[in-house]
Length: 339
Image 1 (cartoon, rainbow, N blue to C red):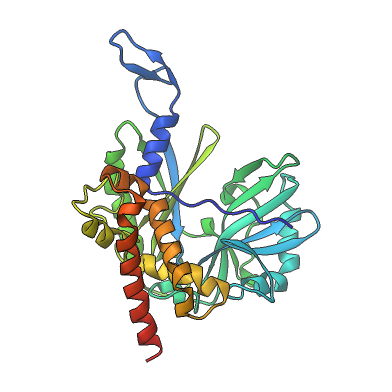
Image 2: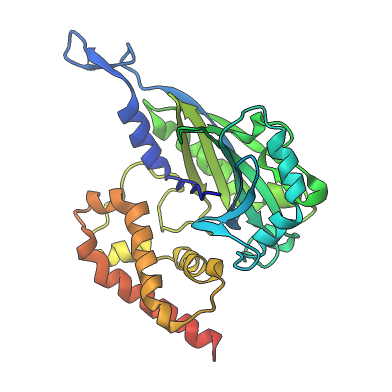
């Protein structure tokens, strides 16, 4: 058994940067302008958008013999569980084994990734009113040399067992959007429109007869053997206070105070509670304040580094202010919960 982490999902602006930099530079034309892939244009890539489910990241691994459960940060067991997911996998081990054994590709190891979502896992979304479910959204096959290959789950047969509360994300509404990376800003209106529709009425929950708020959309595409993923959340679930739901240009924040207001949001703080306390089976504890603040600063540096660079802010410039904001919020939550 070996833990294989699911990669972080980027922001749209990061994907724009990555795709533009990965276009093959083949030389200069007669006007000394760069030529990419034999033309002056950046690629147009078709992305598929699936409903972003507000739960906890989960995975099921198989090495030909053993089956195990994962959370975002490691392997879990029924003795050290995460929201009951390891127990769910153990209870459905033979169902998962059949899924793995029916896969047409044969890696040394296979991991299917998804969202463990439903009642008591998260709050504020329609799917919180549903029974707990595992919804598969990606599969990775690892060969003898340790190299991995990603498979979109709509191309893998048999990845669904509704009777056992196991679903394929493509069993639910999804979206197609061709993004021209010469003019990626032209895609913003459609990205925002789709996201707002999902936030207003979650299509996943609606399929189970529940009406309410959705979180957003995750977009995925394969280009030049690279898998590009980005997320667009609705305003109610965004971890940053952005002016557009799918920003490309870095917001020119005028001060550290403005940056902290932008980055230290209620949703990011609640995500910190999940990562530091809930997913590790821990109650809120002031003695874990340092771990919470470390996660908060690390997440901001990971997700907002381009914004920091664009505003000439280094981690040392914002560290004290981020910590103060996070400390104040957690203290207020502790006082409220234990009042």
